Length: 106
Image (cartoon, rainbow, N blue to C red; front, side):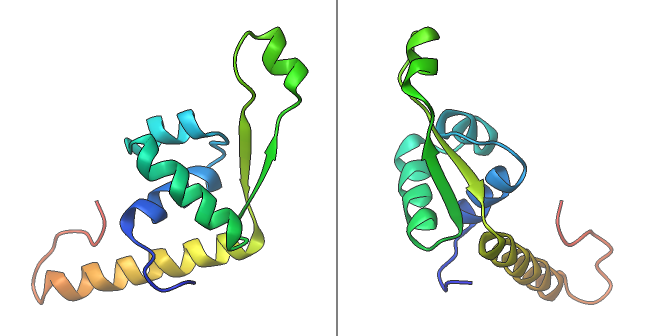
């Protein structure tokens, strides 16, 4: 997993892994703005963690909207997400301290 994987990147990767496939839906699911989501998607695509493809423009024309770029997680992306989640969980456990019954991730 690339170093510097921030929480926004994890959220975007989780959304794609969960089957949310294009930008506006990813923005809705993560509650992140387009100025955050689209640069992250571009970097994930460059790193081979997601794969993107434009839909057939005829579909978009028929639905009277711009074409959508769809994203899918790659095997490398799934491994990176798993590693990021392990790190987040480990960090949360360390921060809780002894005797704190609260769950690691809420």
